[in-house]
Image 1 (cartoon, rainbow, N blue to C red):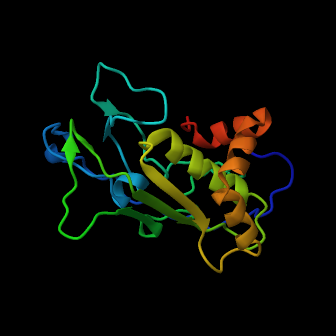
Image 2: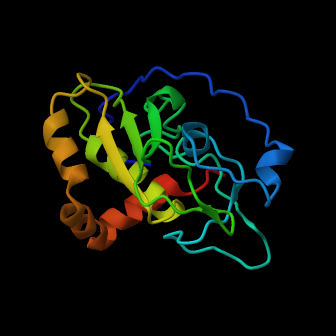
Length: 200
């Protein structure tokens, strides 16, 4: 995707994990199904949830087609996915649903009414001085913003100890105003959209 010299001309390439099967329970609209780390990392079809931030919610189908939510995000520098470069792994995705002890999640029309859910994704740049780290983190964050209900708080950060500027990058990614300003930059948004587009 990127032009010019590559920072990491020969990255290690990892084998993709297998496709996960979608169970009948996951497709059954009558069965409550909370979002979990497996769904964030590798989702084939996700029930359309009320309050989704992104476009594409059609009345004709109860499912959003979100191919492999974060594992299939393209690297901005190489014609590989973030999973193939081991930048994202399912073990570094955490989903938490806050609730008081003894309280159950309340389900209404196949959506959980838990206002304090958090998705945390740690990503690992391929080299410690990767200048694409902020762009990769922004791509992950935008994919989640476009795909998840608004009730989710998002925490996208660099895996501790894996990047020379992890604190600065993490601060940028955590700042909602800076993220919003970045997405108003048409060139930067175009690059993010290329990272999120399906590979042919």
